[in-house]
Length: 280
Image (cartoon, helix red, strand yellow):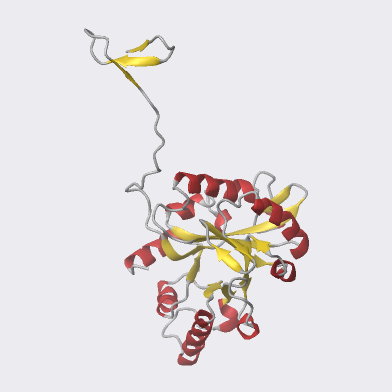
């Protein structure tokens, strides 16, 4: 049993016959990867992630490398919800996403997953672009230790990369010499050629470009259009994502074959099973 020694600390006697004491010391060790750690899935994007029972954490448990949170600027701060009617003062961007991500990054030695994998937090702005960004910018600066930063056009990758979507204060962001966000672009940006470090993603509603929903073969002209868009985006150093896609393995298979970078889903289990089975 522990016994006090002359310096006031407690030691443990190994032998009841001899007073041989060993000092217990707490040694800080790196957070170990365990068998429970999921394999990161680089293509997996959790759409409306905050609607799951455990925002962020469910996606991380499934190995998702991208999650999406809609935000509203309110008197109570930046709140996360899909619609204003669902706003709750305790559901802040900081509480649901930024603080849990920081804790995880600290536990994993500067990474979201023990295995090296880029991680993206997409923030979809639902309120006024400029006012919301003015509130968001200083909040993100408090998490500078884990966020990818761009300084004078040079990207310094960190554990978490923020992609701003929805109502984007594009001109204000582009004018900054130091920023913690990048912009979610649209297909027309492929004609405008903004810097890839400013607009690293190209996203659009699937139905705005394609009528095929996964039933039967994809029409040849639509497949050629998809391949062309992905090829152009990748040629400019940008990633591709579509939202409002049907939740069908047939469509997911086509997206993977076309080398679309992110697959949007609300069905975490099903997409994880699909991507794991196809080693994506």
